[in-house]
Length: 167
Image (cartoon, rainbow, N blue to C red; front, side, top):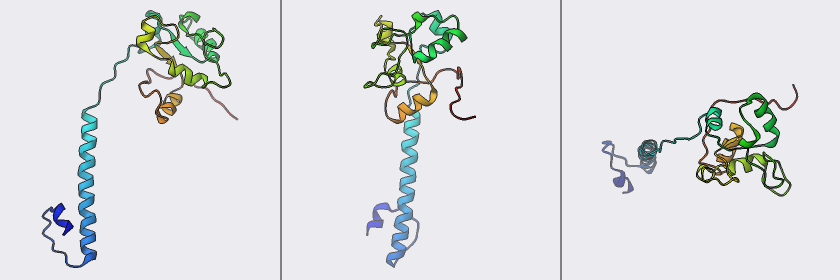
């Protein structure tokens, strides 16, 4: 009898196949619940705490870190945060100017900005890489949903909200 594999000691004796199938389903549910709880608990207890070297725009300015950003957002950043200068922004390899632009046949500017975040290489002086990226939180979540840039963490509050569409 297959129910003997999941012997729980319910004290029920089943005779007909319908009752045995119902009891097997119940025991399977209990088994799966216990397994999922254990797996969730193990995953929760084994999480690694993520420490970031960049916690604010002040950290970027004070440490002279480089930032990856879309070119269309640079003007906003330098006007709203005057302490940021063009030297803080990584240049686009397609034209050598600060900030990334969308170029046909290449990944989008936002994805490129997120892909260029590499703190150790940026710290080592490689000008192609940045310490942090200024992108929308929804872009980071969308990239993680595509299993890309899973090492990125959203830091700080929203700098600006941008409304698009009809009012």
